[in-house]
Image (cartoon, helix red, strand yellow):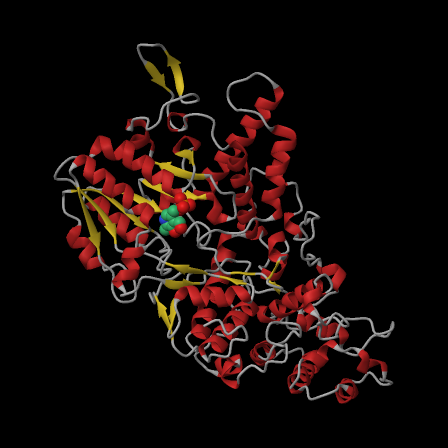
Length: 626
Ligand SMILES: Cc1ncc(COP(=O)(O)O)c(C=O)c1O
């Protein structure tokens, strides 16, 4: 089947009848899957019952075969039959994309279908990518075929004539119209105004999260429109951003908020009686309140702005650690840790004579709790571990591990760098003594993050840097410090980006972190099953509890080669050691390829990734990079 003829609208011109069968008969070439989709649509409109699983399969098959035209796979190079995701989709082990009746975040309810059957998100994924291709194709010369939009052709006005079942098919495919869809033009310099209706309020005066019940159903294709960079072309292909564990993309709300700050509020904070100082101070302190609310800290005094996770851990090591550790004491970490949660403790051990101990993981990449328990001797003064591994995606049993550490008399630092964007954070429920995260990993700016600390610890900790902003009084003899948080925020901070971080967290609150967690979990399950079908691909990190990360090796290829090959197809993944060398070495590896997910990723993007890997593994990549 050639999918290119889906581009060609001219066959409709010859139509005198608009019965589906006649339209199909008039289509050049063979369109078995479109026939099936049409038949399903018709059945659904007649019976009020949509066979969601069958429809998902059709969409996957269309995608696997290179739909939409103009995609990396539709340029004449036939996708090898082994590359078809239909094999994956037919497999009963493959979870169907977001069609679970229990998933409240699944997208639209079909108004045309009486029983309120939910649309599988793969359909809207398909239509979004299809629309994105359409937008890109009309802007990018190198898409070649711009004679017709790479569109199924439904929902288009055909010389002013409506086609039968148009509405059903529009709903089926999640297509409204190109103009309504608001897909960004690649390279557009126009700011993208959010089309997400519940994000339309000014982000600048929001200090309260919407109640959970106010969250609308989650639709990845709608939220994508809030991220202008997702409309970029990379190597002539729509960008597929799967490097979210390294950093996340920023919604327009964040970009606008930072811009607004510099246009209307910019000033240094806390120390002037003029209007702009008051505006900037208010904005900065409101952002602190947003962080407090987001992680459910008891007070804003527990929230210290820092550059990010790395700086937060260093702060604790250099302040609390230096004061509280001495020779004979132990710091316990796990084998999963990022270098940022290893090196500062090594430095502290060198300075104090304390020892660093490491809790091992099993072959799936999960912490061995029995071994962890054994290592929790009375000598352990601090346990520091990650809630989600950046290299494997393991979600550690944080609550249990914190309780165990506390029972042993140790304090706990929980590294939330990889967890804050994927799951609810409640520092009062989890009860770590310190919690740290980076703004750039939760859709906020770089250079800003937060350290949460329990008040009794923060008040007892010495300042780790000295300067302005953190003092009550200075003479040449002595300095009187502010209480936390100011005590730990010496000098002029990253004011604008703190405000941007506040906007990012409010954005996440409006979407609903629980919606995000559910959607991403389904996407991860789908991606795991699909990647497992790629010959020679070995997933590293198979813990039962995982978030976001899909680390793998591909037989016959270096990680960098896979990364470079995917980049040629517009797909951004990380390849390397991910600043977590010890855990990769635990699996006998120096590097892996690491796609990592965020809520704006789609099933269709996973399919594009898997297709590229299938072709690479069967040595049929057009670019022939190796
Ligand atoms: C688990 C974990 N901890 C710490 C860090 C360090 O974060 P940052 O570089 O933002 O300070 C990262 C970054 O990838 C991470 O994944």
